[in-house]
Image (cartoon, rainbow, N blue to C red; front, side, top):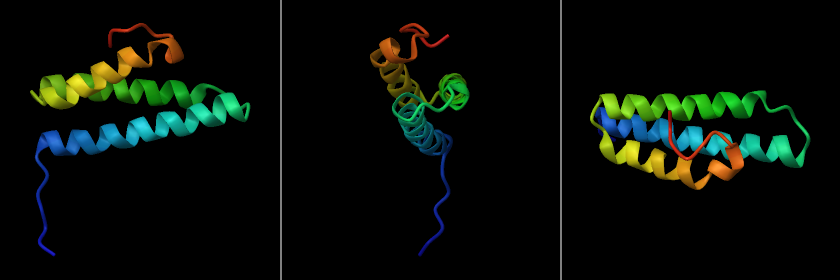
Amino acid sequence: MKDRKLNATDHLRRHWWQAKADFWRHWKECFEQGAGRDRLILDLGTIRSLYWQALGLNALSVAKSIRVWWAKTADLHQLGKAVI
């Protein structure tokens, strides 16, 4: 198998997918199993950081995906519809 170098957009996209999966896994642990919210808040911070990194690297497709997800889940995370 040939090694494939990831560009910045692909790299951020993979981190975004993992961060989103982590959020939903921790959401379930927090609200269905009674775990603390600390991990969930860290996941949201990770997602927010990835958004700003994507904008800074001009990975606009990743930033848009995060922005849309953030707005759609605003009622759940209660941090507003805009990523700030």
